[in-house]
Image (cartoon, rainbow over all chains, first blue to last red; front, side, top):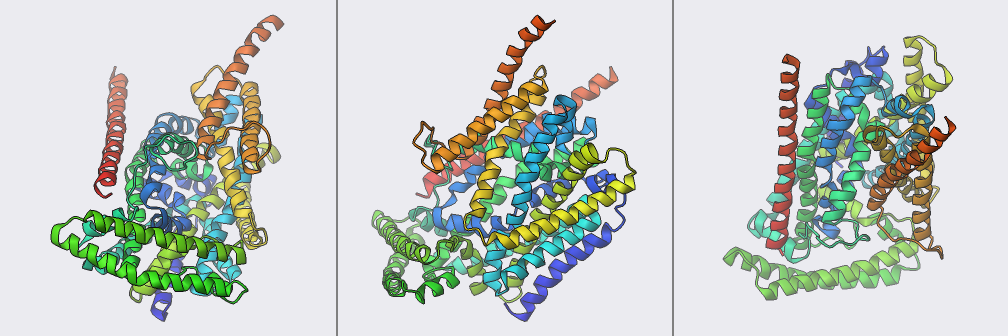
Length: 573
Length: 40
């Protein structure tokens, strides 16, 4: 990065953080600190909800995923608009009527303290671990790209975020989200524009997409009903719906965003805005990845995008083997160039590719994948924790081909995305701990000032814990995977508890509590039995379906238990 | 009476939103199906 890039990056980040702290320096009441004074309008809520969901990994991994596997990931979001409607119809009116600070408060009024504490604790465990990973995962990639120490990168992100959340609470999160989203949109549009400019030799966007299609990157919709396939139309519509419903309806890091609205109407409109914009935004990010793929077909890509791991493997005992794959890669480059040139000429003359060209392009792609497979095997044999090469693709393109100043802007996009999601998490963790644990169980009677000070202390605590957790994360190889798994295992059960509360009015706390414990045990069993190959009967399903399964199971079991309990109660009488 | 009419208007307002959102999703899926077939 050049000096100008550093200036752009640092001015953007410190500008946002400084403005956030200055604007919200007087957040001294519980209303202001945990609900942002209820002054946000619909578009602010919409942007805040989107900023919370869009982490740095969204902008690092998603284009890389499209580069590698095409556009199919977009199907993951198809359930989101319906989830927004359900949250707007059922969840928001209840949260506003009860004037809650956290989603879990509602569960006490419906099922009692036991279920409220269970749901709040599950959230604190799951998000507490995830907050560290939200800082750690992008820091590994950013530190390698800009040449910082890993721990310095973690500290930089963690301290900045904790600072403004500590000062202004929910208001600071909402205020900074607007600027962060503005930087993210601006950066992504500029990168997309430069990509199109670089691809002008293909004859335009449509021709580029036809090339991508011929190389298998434009299979957006997959109709196959395969429970093991992660991204299909059906898993997106149904599995994605339950996942998004759980995330937006019951996860405090999202609930806190729309509870800061000036009215229930503004909150609902904010979610409608998210429902309209989210899928096109993800499509646009994936499309950027596909266009980077086409770009690198025309401009020989590096043999391996994660240069550090490549150099390490080259200097190891695997060096000779890797050298041989690099030679094969170089040989393929000339074949690729001829095939691509012919395909572009056809596209420019007739607008269509002939069958021969399609077959040749497909063959080039198959050979590329075979060589990449060999490279991956060597890199992972040398370092099993090498990480995914795809995460480096987009920013490598940015660093190599975008002009001075714009590179700094794109790094600001990545840092902003990391800070926007981390700030929501730390704010929600502090709020949930303050309201559902501290105020409810530990210190019931105290002044409002006391609770604001306590909330600030918890913000500092969870911010510090997230930083420490991110710093030690590298010591445990499978930690990220473990945290991600834990998150997806709890979501269905929590959603089941909330939907039972909202829809099955006669079910009581005891039934739903037992149903939640039974379901959670079942989900653990299915996941562990498949993951560790236990020699026991086990259904094999992808994790997106866990949410559907667990949610329906909690509702059905609690219904059954409540029905069984009734006659017994009558006999007791 | 007045409140009922207001509630009815409110419900109508949100129904239009929900319907538009689902139509927009449906149109997007149709577009993606078209692109998948056209660009193969």
